[in-house]
Length: 474
Ligand SMILES: Nc1ncnc2c1ncn2[C@@H]1O[C@H](COP(=O)(O)OP(=O)(O)OP(=O)(O)O)[C@@H](O)[C@H]1O
Ligand SMILES: [Mg+2]
Image 1 (tube, protein in one colour):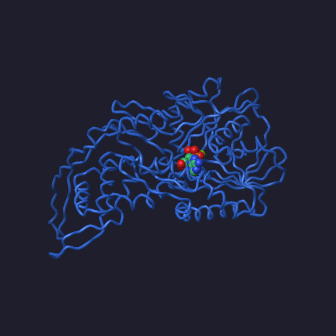
Image 2: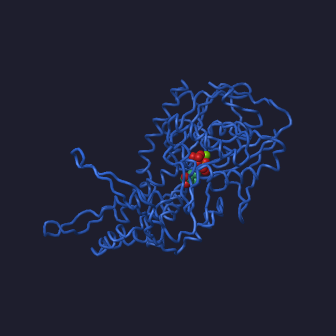
Image 3: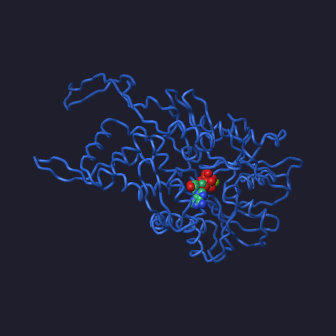
């Protein structure tokens, strides 16, 4: 159990908090009285919340935030992808045929399909890669970058935003999920080490990492009056992770009774919507003819050759190979539904629209938070898919099970029963989904308090920084 009291440890310094989120990032400051979320200037924009995005152009210049996304869309609009086969070198391959002495070593020329005209690469959701040891370096235009290098320009911008207020301050609070995506001690260790490196490159010299739901608790307590001994559950549901904490309110502060988290967030939900609502409209389940034993028979179009890469939009351009395009063209000859659906698939691949599909899905999902039905619309490929709350409820069934499991784990770790809770503090963009809040209400029968969905974490980090909260020493 971590105990914390809101009493000032060091005088005269301002509190600074940086929320480097999977989807959005923000910065806040706190001087003991006023809590301010700072305006971040990037390109032509001045925003309290910037998308956590970086676009690297062909001349290796980074553009971050909303400007980066706009640049990517502008550069890619109406661009047809042309993949060329390029030699990536030669390597030796040994073939063995069973018996002694049968092995033979041959030199193989390896080729890879590369997008020749690619004007730049956009990266989003990089925070979710931090705990993944399989993702270490990213190749961008024949140069290999460590993923920390993709984060540094974003952190630099956040630092530039708070620097005028920081005086000589070097220790600032930076948010972290309870568990990074990957969900093991090793992923957490690796993610923190990479984030520390990126901070150092951005000259954020001494980041103090603070669990995001604990930061949310601090900004909640700053703006709400609560009773001593009451207990709250903080539910921070963002783009990459779901983070929970159970708090007990003390005379001057609070105790953290338990924290917990899983790699479930809005991005994963968007992918689930893609699979359930869009896949059947772009080729999943389409029947095509094939010749077998001198007879024509109907078989399923091999959608699985495309499915994974479509969702991994950052690499979807790699689907543009002659074999995969040809497979679609052959399928389209079927006519009817098959032709309509596979033409859309061809459009996504040839015009590199995977990111735009995910944006259309995300907008429709957000619309469903305020209305009961909407349309997922991608005009470029003649796609208009009705999407209702009922469809969404169906998709949310599996995530809700994971949420329930995490919830009961955290409550039991805190040794607190549902009945002892006074309220649930909901924050993070994904907690705006009505079905999520309704589910929590039905399960816990206590008030759901919506708290500053997007900037509550940065605000809480600034407060934590001001009061010198350090979870490792409490
Ligand atoms: N009104 C809304 N209804 C449903 N989902 C929403 C809404 N607004 C935003 N979202 C989703 O919330 C997510 C972003 O939330 P948030 O900014 O809290 O995440 P983050 O802090 O960047 O991520 P994390 O904390 O996991 O690192 C996105 O997946 C977005 O689609
Ligand atoms: Mg967040």
